[in-house]
Amino acid sequence: MVSGIYRRSLTVPAALFLLGALPTPCLANAYGITPSRVYNYYAAGLRFPESEYVEGAKYGLVGDGSTDNTAAFRALLGHGGRAVHVEAGTYVTGALDIPGNTTLLLDPGVIIKDSGRLIPSAKLITIDHNNVYIRGPGAEVLSDPRFYHGGEYRHGVFIIGATDVVIDGLQSSGNSGDGFYIGSNHQEKPALDVTLENCSALHNRRNGLSITAGVNITVRNCSFSYTRGTSPQFGVDIEPDTHVEPLTNIKLINVRTVANASGGISVYLGSAYHPRNPIGIEIVNHQSIDERRPYYANGVGKVPGTVAYNGKKIVTP
Image (cartoon, rainbow, N blue to C red; front, side, top):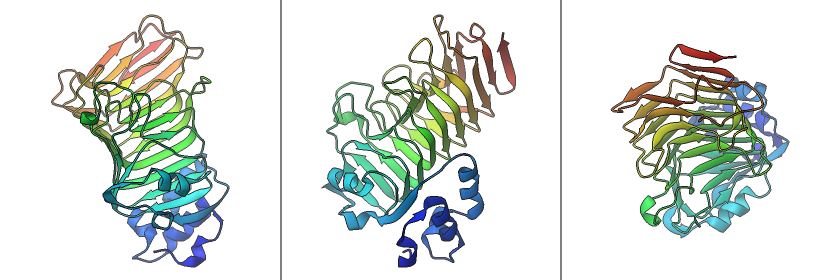
């Protein structure tokens, strides 16, 4: 528990610095939030306005695996500007939208569980606002494709048009769409400066991760496994939704894919893709296990820019 002195309004980076300096057993040590780690994200561009620290339990969250927490979560998240702590438990919920300037600290053992009542176009967690940091090693976003008959758009974590998003240590599993999705919003604004680190996706129906549009996207030390159900069925699928969406400075580093039905990583650009700026996709140290196609490429070499896979580079002027 964090002392009341730290519940006053602080900038989130400042609050996390203070937490990182506290001795065990404190919240900071549970999350591995150290001054240097927070500084790295802060220096990379994350900026938060004044924020208050809030406990999920005080907003009525009940982690018993059956109570519907949708209203409680929405009240807890509010309009943003909060550092939110959620204790271990299984929290059933409907669709949630994470507001801007939010830090979400999930204890190990937190399960955010789909209530099974999402409409076909709904996502379990949507991030379409700027400045969101989710820290959740040992925490999980969980759905079950048996809840739904078909469909491929009920994604676990849906990041569209947002800037400065970091998700660290979260697992997204059992979704009837993708585990994670990164792309543009309805105004064709791509995701910008997004990092997935130490995340995993298991047993999703369409892809472990889809990247359809983005600038400065980093996926590091993540794993994507056992995707099966509806095409494309890759661990990671990099595939623009339109003919002009950007794929600029996309980096996959130390990514592991396991037993995905169609293969490990796909870069599918097609023949009609003509982005306004050269593409840049770099895949470094990809490990594929039990997959007939560790890497699949379509349209690479026909689009201006660079695509590199495990040291092999294709540069197209």
